[in-house]
Image: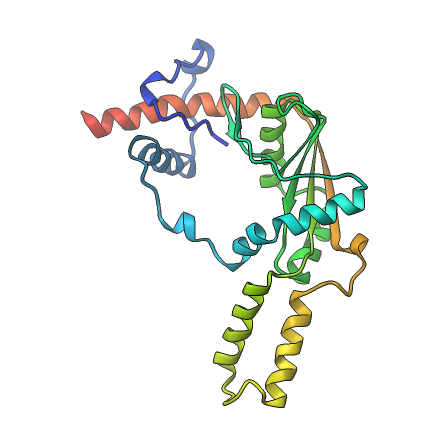
Length: 241
């Protein structure tokens, strides 16, 4: 959610209170900034970011099914938000914005679509949402001015084309000569059963976490962004001079 303005030279100077502090950026934060610099200045990045894996692919492909499940359970129609929103520090695209004004939202909803039952039910091991999602929600609430956010983990069927791909992978590694082999068909049936969930009640296919707005954490995020900006300028100086 770090602000990604392409015009690095126009980044405003951080306020003197923050500017005089040492720059407590971790190695991970510095690596992120250097990658961000390449993306902002040249439009180039690590191509593997666009590839993802089968888990993230399902999350994207089945997101609308998850939104339909949430709408049904809440008795309210939700639609996928496509707007990229931003303020002076952050930008992002919340999955669902509830309310008429995206910059004065009633709440925002983030949709997660786990691969299978194992990854879905692992969320019950936590009393609160994972830290990375917590700060993601604080960022979204900062942008939209929402007082509350929700993270919904939804267990929905794998899309048909992805299911067929998984069947093909299963057959190729199974060693059977024909996909009509009775033993292979049993394995395929087990695969389908583990990747489709219509036999479960809709109410049992959602795990929801509520995240309240925390103004102190939002201000902390802003301060960290302000500390990243001069580091981006430092990267540019090292690169060009």
